[in-house]
Length: 526
Image (cartoon, rainbow, N blue to C red; front, side, top):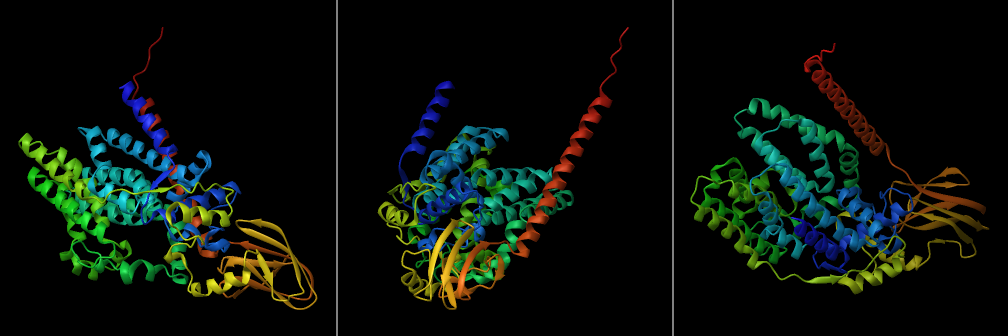
């Protein structure tokens, strides 16, 4: 046992230290987000605006994405020195948590279940082809919630808190796990008790995360969020398993074989008759071409983007179902595990990218070169498509106008000096002998407000950048990022929910202590 722990520690240390990352399609965004979280945290700012993306123009940040994954990777990046190490450390941490979770649930054969989960064709395909860091980090929480849902809900507080964490880690996985938990509650013999518990779970998760999803609903309308996620090449009906013109064909093919492996394995072991197995079959079915009518009729499914996402919860359900199949011959159980694992032979070969080693103090100019040299990323550090505002086409002309300067004046004779440049605030001193306009190196966003000589001033859009008008003379101009009323309302609601849960937990703890004290037999002394 000691040797196994030492070996595991050595492997973890090597993984964290090795300056390599799988060259997946999602790697680019996750490295940049983790780096920008490091940049914000090191400056004492929340990562609500990522200041160095888009050639220093900034980005709406991870407010339009589940933020917990990049925040964890960024925090670990600060600890270990760079964003790449932070991502690798976060992956190692997630694997260790998965082993702890499976062991805690007292699942028979838990070490094998954890290993097969990590090495399953679905997870390996995701790592090799996409490397979706947040989705990988969500696996332990998703596994635990699915296990709780199948066994039967007992505590809506615990399940609701876990579902909230899963939403903040990876919203699509949370949506799928929630749907499968609902199906498990409906199929439970005690559905009269399970359904209210499930509804309480969802309500708890929603209240705890309203600070994130409420502003998201409002902000998404001012970006290309919806069109980028659910139209064109990303439309789910173009990416169902088995379609000949899928957007990411290599993933579609590998996931298709993985789906076949899951179904054959469940059939061989007879595990499809169990609740876990039936839910796994349903999840696989939702990813395949015959499910197209369902994707047309259920609007929220379009936000999942890729139907093969359903194969991750299908695998997390199928593996324990296979190992729990005790009423079949041992050879059938072994055959089922082989059938489940064989599709891993068809996973595309892994390619590695050099770690650009972005630190909290890396300037965007150097970061652009490092990203390009490391994995052929865009040297201008362009953010993902769904985070781009409608005036994105004007960015190129704006960058030409700004060059590498932090701000410009429209009056050629005007002078400006930068006195402060922080992630969420910028300050300038401007001297101009005529009416002028200050154009700041900031992607125009309604959360930015300006003050001129400590008095509120209006902001405008100049190309893709933020600007403010100035009267002749000397002025101190401050530009700050401020949360809107929707964000503040969401934060207030979530804070109240957290306090209420804390008070409830304290009350229940006192009640248990009181009950234990009253039930203790009296001690007689002379």
